[in-house]
Length: 75
Image (cartoon, rainbow, N blue to C red; front, side, top):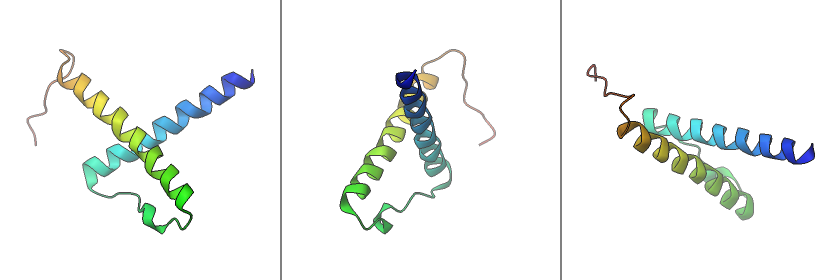
């Protein structure tokens, strides 16, 4: 049961990081990790956000190569 909760929280954290990456990509607003004074926590935050960027890139690449998605012509 404890392992299930850890996995659940880890997946939630990756989803939050991916949403933040999507916000950065679509709006240009990014989390300013330079405001974190502790270098260890800043490094952790940068890596945490990097995971979201990676997942977002993988999702974007999958959607480009999928027949289920098409580019919206309104943009």
